[in-house]
Image 1 (cartoon, one colour):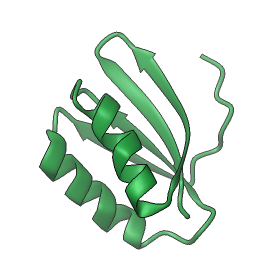
Image 2 (cartoon, helix red, strand yellow):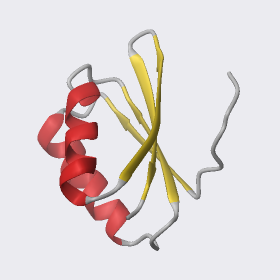
Image 3 (cartoon, helix red, strand yellow):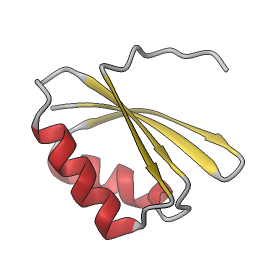
Image 4 (cartoon, rainbow, N blue to C red):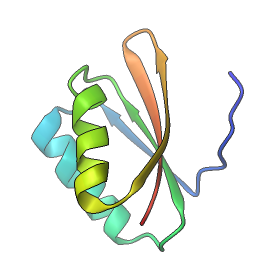
Length: 79
Protein backbone atom coordinates (compact mmCIF):
# COMPACT_ATOMS: atom_id res chain seq x y z
CA UNK A 1 0.00 0.00 0.00
CA UNK A 2 1.34 3.39 -1.00
CA UNK A 3 0.19 6.09 1.38
CA UNK A 4 -0.33 9.38 -0.47
CA UNK A 5 -1.45 11.42 2.53
CA UNK A 6 0.14 12.11 5.90
CA UNK A 7 -2.66 11.91 8.45
CA UNK A 8 -2.56 14.23 11.44
CA UNK A 9 -4.89 11.91 13.31
CA UNK A 10 -6.00 8.27 13.09
CA UNK A 11 -9.53 7.21 14.01
CA UNK A 12 -10.18 3.46 14.01
CA UNK A 13 -13.97 3.17 14.02
CA UNK A 14 -13.87 -0.63 14.07
CA UNK A 15 -17.28 -2.18 13.40
CA UNK A 16 -19.15 0.94 14.59
CA UNK A 17 -22.29 1.51 12.51
CA UNK A 18 -23.62 4.55 10.69
CA UNK A 19 -25.05 6.84 13.39
CA UNK A 20 -22.42 6.19 16.03
CA UNK A 21 -19.56 6.30 13.52
CA UNK A 22 -20.67 9.65 12.09
CA UNK A 23 -21.25 11.16 15.56
CA UNK A 24 -17.81 10.03 16.78
CA UNK A 25 -16.20 11.32 13.59
CA UNK A 26 -18.01 14.66 13.97
CA UNK A 27 -16.81 15.06 17.58
CA UNK A 28 -13.25 14.03 16.69
CA UNK A 29 -13.00 16.40 13.72
CA UNK A 30 -14.49 19.27 15.72
CA UNK A 31 -11.20 19.38 17.68
CA UNK A 32 -9.08 19.50 14.50
CA UNK A 33 -7.83 22.58 12.63
CA UNK A 34 -8.93 23.37 9.06
CA UNK A 35 -6.62 21.69 6.57
CA UNK A 36 -5.66 18.84 8.88
CA UNK A 37 -6.14 15.29 7.63
CA UNK A 38 -7.74 12.41 9.50
CA UNK A 39 -7.41 8.77 8.50
CA UNK A 40 -10.56 6.82 9.33
CA UNK A 41 -10.57 3.03 9.36
CA UNK A 42 -13.97 1.37 9.21
CA UNK A 43 -15.17 -2.24 9.02
CA UNK A 44 -18.79 -1.21 8.40
CA UNK A 45 -19.81 -1.70 4.73
CA UNK A 46 -22.39 1.11 5.07
CA UNK A 47 -19.59 3.59 5.73
CA UNK A 48 -18.64 3.42 2.05
CA UNK A 49 -21.72 5.52 1.31
CA UNK A 50 -22.19 7.27 4.66
CA UNK A 51 -18.76 8.88 5.00
CA UNK A 52 -18.61 10.49 1.51
CA UNK A 53 -22.17 11.86 1.94
CA UNK A 54 -21.33 13.22 5.40
CA UNK A 55 -18.15 14.87 4.06
CA UNK A 56 -20.17 16.67 1.38
CA UNK A 57 -22.73 17.88 3.94
CA UNK A 58 -20.03 19.08 6.36
CA UNK A 59 -17.87 20.60 3.60
CA UNK A 60 -14.88 18.38 4.32
CA UNK A 61 -12.83 16.94 1.46
CA UNK A 62 -12.71 13.18 1.06
CA UNK A 63 -9.22 12.87 -0.40
CA UNK A 64 -9.23 9.12 -0.92
CA UNK A 65 -10.85 5.82 0.01
CA UNK A 66 -8.85 2.61 -0.03
CA UNK A 67 -10.60 -0.75 0.34
CA UNK A 68 -8.86 -3.80 1.76
CA UNK A 69 -11.38 -6.63 1.82
CA UNK A 70 -13.99 -5.68 4.42
CA UNK A 71 -11.93 -2.76 5.72
CA UNK A 72 -11.99 0.75 4.25
CA UNK A 73 -9.52 3.56 4.92
CA UNK A 74 -10.65 7.15 4.34
CA UNK A 75 -8.45 10.24 4.19
CA UNK A 76 -10.50 13.33 5.00
CA UNK A 77 -9.28 16.92 5.02
CA UNK A 78 -11.14 19.19 7.41
CA UNK A 79 -12.82 22.06 5.61
